[in-house]
Length: 280
Image (cartoon, rainbow, N blue to C red):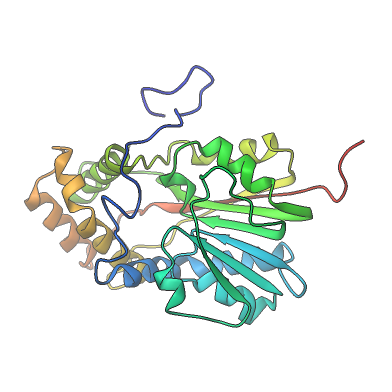
């Protein structure tokens, strides 16, 4: 929990002026879609298994928030056989590059007043809310987009060991990355374990959650993802003063080494369902 947490125990819902995709992770930078797809290669199978277990299938109209390159949106259509997917992102260039029958791309900011694209059987957001301000309000707003019986599924990062692990170039850089992203674009993962309570607070039921932590294996998608992410966030990482160029380069080499034995950040997925009928 950050030092400036509110008296109710939740992090403050504010962030710097810069946003994801502006100060860092700009979509116009060559290779940004490849970086996003490295995360997809790591987490998509688990995400799809959870969505299908929750009922995603024929007849479902789905909303994929922060859809990135559209890997989950296309798999929902191709593998789960859903009726439609509305894929929303602040920049839809990667979605436009991969059209698919039943997939509609919408360039929009989910935090903007009046964002209301309809009602859906599934509302899914992965690695989105951790970068945004007003998170509690956004969770409530996304829950409000559910059709009766619909399910809201939220996934974000969780770091189980960096704060307490021994001091190594890897843990130093990971700590500096979280601090740099928080100071630059407002990224905050400290509140993510509170997802289940926040989903319950929106009036959803059948709330549950799970954690997936992939292994760091040299050459694996997740190891390459972190190396690419550190490279693109290098300026904000170094600006913290916690690490220098040498330490950052050592951490990248460690990810590529057979000696790598660290536990990476993982992903919490939490979900809740809208009642079939409003309570009397």
